[in-house]
Image 1 (cartoon, helix red, strand yellow):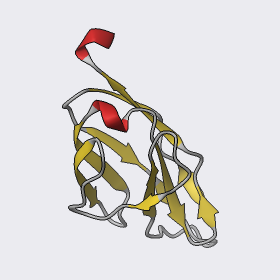
Image 2 (cartoon, helix red, strand yellow):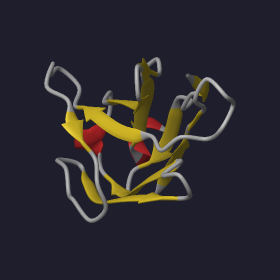
Image 3 (cartoon, one colour):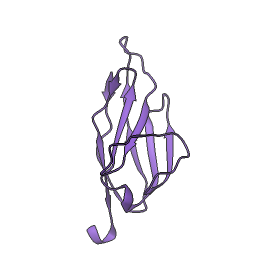
Length: 106
């Protein structure tokens, strides 16, 4: 069961942003979560692991025990409108929207 889903995030282009999520089993013990990203305009989800790069994101870091924190480093405009979900055994969070604000948007 997802107990704390990731929230929407707005980030200035070039900055970093973090998503958090926690999940528990039926006894209330924390369980490891996985992370997925869906680019804007796509129906394909990408599983996220440490060190991968995505269009519009320089680096992905998954940390915490049990993998509760997702960090996107060097976010660029191409990532705008993408969504993040966390998944655990038998559970999936609602999507969290990533909004990238360019200097001319601010």
